[in-house]
Length: 388
Image (cartoon, rainbow, N blue to C red):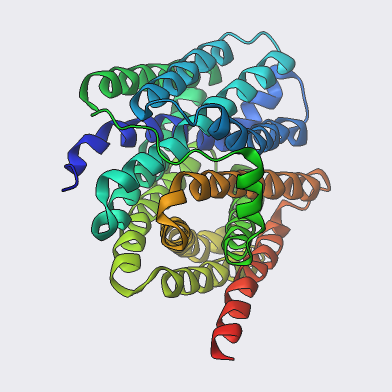
């Protein structure tokens, strides 16, 4: 008999802290660039560096920590994340902040796959989608509350205060994990070579490709959303906070709906529908950016809501697809998916930086649409093979 999912609230809080730190930087980029005396594209590379470190670090950290009891691993990772936020808050310059973000990435890369694997094991086959969505909801709730609040706190008290706030959240999650989370033994141990071998499986690789391309589309725009909206609709920091709040609410709803839909109708159909709706949202953002500042937001805001709803629902179903391929190796496949997500984040942030550096932020939607279309191709190819 599987345990109660109530215990997962501490993993939700840990994911909330990680999501707040990871996503709030999009609203802080202009202030960071000014304070650290670097260009906007260079500030955006803080996202790229974090994402690359996470993508490379996730499988390596999974191997190094494979034999640790799960609660102990989660506590160590959240403790490192707390410390790294404190270092970021007192960083005297760009290089020191970059180093702190690398430590944040390695801590998050240790925590998130372990949290998802812990949730999948606790939920069991019949509640796997709901259990995974509880962890993912921590990230989406971070976008709902943490990111808009981070923008407002950063505007009023400086960007360093946001890192101090996240350190407090992480410390609370750490205490909850130690006091309230049941022990769970280490699962299947796999070497780095075995993990790479699993990544070479065609069925796994197809799922990972969809994750990379989907997230690349998201971060092409999301990393520079403040710049994009200021360019096409003259939205300021307070307006940006409201837009991010709407995006976060839609993402939270999408995460829950994605988990339920994966359990009820299957993960692959859920991903196809989510990917199609995400692509539609990007196309509307692209077309709406050219109507002029006064008329843009009535078009852009509904598209942003659809984008959040569809893209986050899709990612919950992606996790369920990987677990279904081999439930015994769920920690392995989920760590690979985490790497894919952050590889996509790095790709999108870097691609967006090139566009922003050319002064063409209004064109970010078209680039995201290209990634969104490419994300659907592995799914369509898989469908043709099944039909044949």
